[in-house]
Image (cartoon, rainbow, N blue to C red; front, top):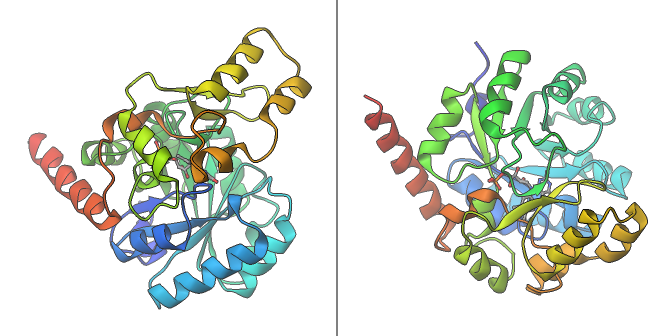
Length: 312
Ligand SMILES: Cc1cc2nc3c(=O)[nH]c(=O)nc-3n(C[C@H](O)[C@H](O)[C@H](O)COP(=O)(O)O)c2cc1C
């Protein structure tokens, strides 16, 4: 039997809030950890010294309550970030989007628990070989960057759970208690939630972005930029330009040019709903209200218990 995520991470609820560019600063991460889960600061949109400030702030808020930091491994100043994580003795590090063999042992030597996000069985096995403590299996429903093979959580989770001996956390498409329970039935030892917490009160996303998200229906996002780095986007004007270019077989160079720089910041953080890159998961169609994290977690628990009763 695999180790429980709660005992591995020293938390009460097997719920992790995913690292999310422009959404998950110290406020969101702290709110999730204080609600009994594990909050992650998303370093992907932070300069190294900004990350250090967020880590120092969350330590003041949380005391000994655990938290973590997510680092996309394609980050340009990776060495500096890793140095900050080890110096600040961050208890949990979640790496994503690269080779986990690069830093896992170094982080573990400083006492960190290391988990890696994967979107296929092949990479789950590689992460396990690299010595990570758990893998986060992210299905293609998820917000943010995603696997090219488009494996949904329903298929990815049991395949990964059966392929590796370490704990597996399911991510992608989980916004209600019934989906949490389903993830457990699929073999997950815990869940990672992104989109729901991206529209929480504590998320640092712009109010425009949150309000737009609440209006979205079941056909509002698309896995785009598959030639460069697949990412699930809301279908706004910027998306339409990218989509048109991809459909006519535009070169990587042209698509990179359309993408430009700072698009996710423009959209998610500055609230430019026309020109911004707006990342969110398919489950946004099920989310209708901005709420504080504590309330969201209480509702998830209620729904989880109700779903369990309904199975009897
Ligand atoms: C706005 C947004 C930004 C994200 N940024 C990151 C990131 O920087 N690093 C990462 O590993 N995952 C990122 N993700 C993925 C989340 O951490 C999480 O795994 C995913 O959202 C879970 O699926 P869900 O959106 O269906 O809940 C992002 C997701 C969203 C919605």
